[in-house]
Length: 115
Length: 111
Image (cartoon, rainbow over the protein chains, first blue to last red):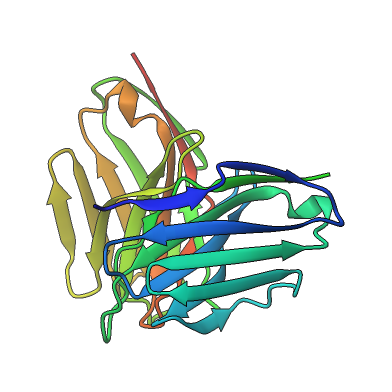
């Protein structure tokens, strides 16, 4: 199984709503990532979890709150978002290999629209 | 932080021709250089990668070359097919496990 599964595929939410994006992988990867991708732009790294601990936060606003409940799951909790937060949110996972970056497997993404 | 420049932004070739996409990076600590293909409505998919201790890597119709001194790396696709049409991103990573992406190249292969 080389899949990273993201749910939901599409999400429309109001600016006062609270919602969560979910990501799951069963490849035994101990690094998991959230990226944000705007139309016609490259993915931008938001958060990195290594061994279920947050290791990188790329100065992301607090209205985005990541959570890694176990080695297979990654959540992104959303609260009080703005219309400009509308984007494709991508989850990825990879092995943790000492001294080297490794291949990241991406999910299909959640297309988020904030109204 | 790392800066990755990718050229060209769009590339149109005839089926059967070759396509070349080039990237430069700024961080001399970068040691991992992936290439991703992203089709419409899908997440990026790794097509080939190269590490800093290797100068060239080939996988069937796809090859990547790396010039560490000049901080350049390139993707070469030979015998292009319509299904190669997609957006291609180069990436540059360090031991921290972060990847910075180029702005992408939209490749169109005309039948």
